[in-house]
Structures are given as structure tokens and as C-alpha cells.
Amino acid sequence: MHVPRSGSAAASPAPSSAPSSAPSPLDPDDDLPADAEVDALVVGSGFGAAVAALRLAEAGHSVAVLERGFAYPPGDFPRAPHEFGRNLWDPSEGLLGLFDVWSFRRMDAVVASGLGGGSLVYANVLLELEEEFFTTGAGRDWPVGAGELAPGYRRAREMLGGTPFPYGTAPAPTGPILKVHAMQRAAARLGTTALTPDLAVSFGEGRGRPLPVDPWNVHGIPRRSCTLCGECDVGCNQGSKNSLDHTYLSRAREHGARLLTGHEVRRLDRDGGRWRVGYVRRRRGADDGSGAPTPADPGRTAGSVRARIVVLGAGSLGSTYLLLANRCGLPGLSARLGHGFSGNGDFLGFLTSRDPGFRASRGPVITSAIPVRGPAGDGGPGAEFWVQDGGFPGFLDWIAENALPLRPAARLVRLFASRRWQDLRGVRPAQVSGQLARLLGPGQRAAGILPLLTMGRDTPSGRLGLRDGYLDLDWSPAQSREYFAEVRRTLRRLAVAIDAEYHDSISTFLSRSVTVHPLGGCGMGRDPGTGVVDERGEVFGHPGLFVADGAVLPGPVGPNPSLTIAALAELFSGRMRERLATSPAVAA
Image 1 (tube, rainbow, N blue to C red):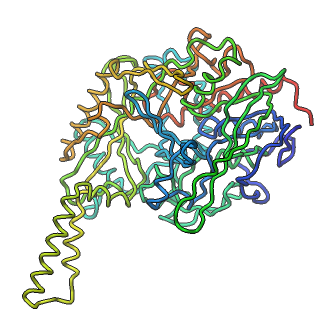
Image 2: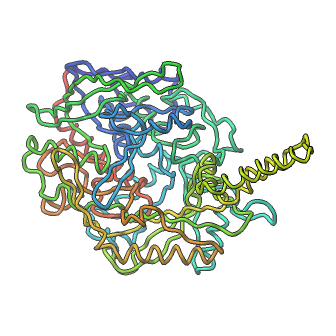
Image 3: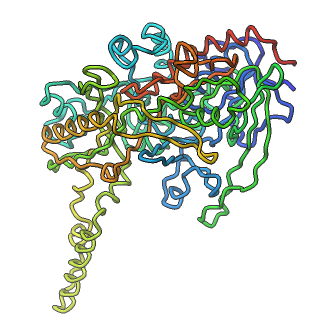
């Protein structure tokens, strides 16, 4: 059965044009019929998958997007403690939340599960790879070059609406010292420059003001401009982030693509002249009104869909796992499958400022980026890494402020003793505001914390495989030891430059690496001996099967990889359309 599109089968208007009327709200119970068949089946909804979905749908093809997670309209991202405790992805434990945490030997990885993929929780930074990367750096062995990526970068940047952080770039004589000021000062003292990269954020004409209505938006909920609350990495409840659900995916749906949430793909093989994709479908449980979370519905249903082409966009871990788990039905896959894994050099450190006016949590998560020339390594002599200011939600200031329980306990004891002494003296002032202020404390401990996020070109020495049916990673930091040592030296120098103290993260003390940018596993190559997919993302030996996400990167890129992944998907979409043009259409 051919899956009907919501619009005309003819090519739709350019994606920049708005529809004549708002689409119906996204239906969380939507599913495919039992005998469904589509032109293109897209697995996942991250930076590669969303791009492919739009470009194929606007070309007039029937497209279905299967996303294992669920939609998060503005206002739906959890904030309360009981909500945060269940905002994790582990169906075996009844958890169908946003964050999926993978733990391997010596490395942990944090990815997202929701409509929009990693864009829901990333820090919005849009950086391109410099041209030199493809001639003197790690990209010299890539099968694509800067010229081929340039149009994709331009289109992705236009869709994601990048703009630099517009506030506080020039410190006022008085008032709070923002982290953007601190980064500028540190960079100047180190003889370099702190850039203000484009951010996929709508700042509007003022903080928290209504944004122009998007008549194509799948959520149908008004969005507001950035309030500088620092909540980008836990989901933006204002709708200020130009995440993929607000951009690429909304436009794809307007052009007829079906966005199906709660659909996790498990099987992939050939069925005659078509691809057959098997999935399980889940539904989130409902709150019973008691305030206690209801476990996710343990029941699940299975289904399958046939497609002319399949686009894997489930992320480096998800797409690599799907190919490994279905290898028996995909004969001839490259022996490079699983190789070349990297955490993109991710490293986290913290500074504590001695300046009482410092305000680290004000603004989006990232406002600035300092490029640093690093040691020779996989990226070649002078390989770059980047240091970026981090941020965290204001409500986490309470945790940071009271991280050492003896401090608030001591203040509480002093307050109790003071009140008791007043009772004994018979003096009991009615106004106790000053005493309560002393109980809360000065609050400078939280205000002075500045996370520093570093990413760069470590050695892609990891190998993903299966162990007892589960994804496994063989990775050691040994080959990147000098890289990480140079990163720590640089962060210490930055601390001195802004009169702060440097602190390693807990993961460093535990000798573990934590990445939010897992890359590789299905790397691009010029032939099956050097890669899993070709220069247009098509799996060697399997026409019509594509990978379009961070898995295809042959190694670390250094700067935030989201824009590069989107640009590659823009490039890959041309081959996808060519493949559909040469294969028999699905029956109406």
C-alpha cells in the first residue's frame, strides 16, 4: 500500500515559502498501515535525517520519518525533580525520556531521543570547517572537499537561522560580568581572539517577546525570543532554539513527509526490489494526576514498512548499531564498519572566578569560541581545538551553591542559635529578613562557576562492535594522551588570564572520557577498503541504503559537528534523489 502524502504529489513550493494554512497538530498516535510502502524511509530525526526528509519531500517523494523518541513542544521539557528523574531513555526500565546515556569502557556518551534529535539539547553553535582542514588537516583524506560542502553549509545556515550572541559583547562600566566578557579578556591576554559564532537561536527584538508565527510549525505553539536562561542543553521551553523540529522537520511535514514518533527501528534487509524495515512502536504513559510519574506503557507493537531507499540518521551509535545488528542480511558490508570512532576530543573543565560581579549562567549555553593551535597529532601539525564557554540553567545554581552540605548546615545552626539566644534574652525582633539573608548565604559560589567545553581533533582510534547483542566500544585514550594534556594546559592558562581557579571534572578524576559528539563508525571512503559509505553517503554494495549523520565522518572535525553533518546531508540528498529517479516508483 502506498502511503498517501498530506499534500500534492507534485513538487512543493520552495521551503522558504509559508503554507496557506497551518497544518494539523502532530498526532502522537499516528502509525503506518500494515502494508505500507514509501519512496524514502528515514530513520531518526537529527541533523542528517531531518535534512534528507525535507529535501526528498520537497522533490515530491513520499517520505516517512521513524523517530524512537517523542515530540517536545515549547513548555514540555521537564523541569521538576520528579520529571528530571524520568527524563532518560531506557525502555527496559519503562523510561522513554529525552536523554540516552551510553556507558562503555573508559568512555560515556550522551545523546538525545526525541523529534529533532540532538538539536533539542545541543548548544546551538554553527561552525564550518575551515578550507585548510581539507588540505593540511584531518580532512585531507576525506572523499569530499570544502568546495562541495560550501552550498550545503549555506543552505543549512539559512534554514537554522544562525546569528551571533547580540548582548553584552562590550562590558559596561558597572553591572554583571558576563561569560562572553571573560572569554574576550582571556583570549586577549593569550594573544588570540574569542569569536562569537553563529547560534541557531532567535533573539528577536527583546528577551521573551513573541516571535513571528510559523504557520508551518508542527507543534502549533507560539515561540518566544531567547530569555538568556541558560537552559539550551535541557530543552528550550520558550521555543527560542531554531531546533530541527521548528525548522527542517516542520518544513518536511508541510511538503508531505509523515513524522512518526515512538517508532524504534530494529530490522533492516532487502525484500525483492525494496528495502524492508521492521520497527517496534511505543507509547508514553499518561500522568494519573497524583503527581507521581506513571511508568511508560510496557506494551509495544511491531510493524514494518517497505521503501525504495532507506536513510539511516540515528546518530553515530544508533546507525552503526543497526548495521552491525543486521549484518547477516546485508552481505558485503565493508570491514571498516565500526572503525574510526571518536568523541571529537570532548573535554569538560570548570573555572571558579574570584570576581564577585561574575555571572556565568546568564545567556545561552555558549556565547564564545576560542580557537587554539594544539599539538601535532591525527589532525596534522598545528591541529586546532576549540574552547567554548559553557552554561547551565539558573535553577542548577541552587545545587552548585549547596554542593558542600556543611556550608548551608553551618548557616542553619547559626540561625537556630541566634534565635534561641534571642528567646533566652526575651528579645524577639519582628523583622528577621537579615537573618534569612544570612541563611541563604551570599550565593557567589554558584555565580562564579564557568564550565569550559573543549572539542578538537583527537585520534579516531575507537572501534564499535557487538558484545552479547549489545553495542560495545573498544577505545583507549592512550593515542590521544598528548592532545588531552595540551587541552588541560590551555584551560589552566585561561584560568590565570581571568583570575580564576581551574578544576577538573569528576570524569577526569575517574579517568573516563565523556562525549556529547560521538562520531564515526560508518566513515566515508573512496572504496570499501577505506570506508563504509561513499562520498555521497551510500553504503558500498547496497544501492539505495544511505547513512546521513555523524557516523559517516571519517574522524573528528574539531568544532561543533552539527552544521557539518547537516551540510553533508544536503550534499547526500542529491544522490538520494538520483537513486529514486532510477528505481521503479511505488504503486499508488
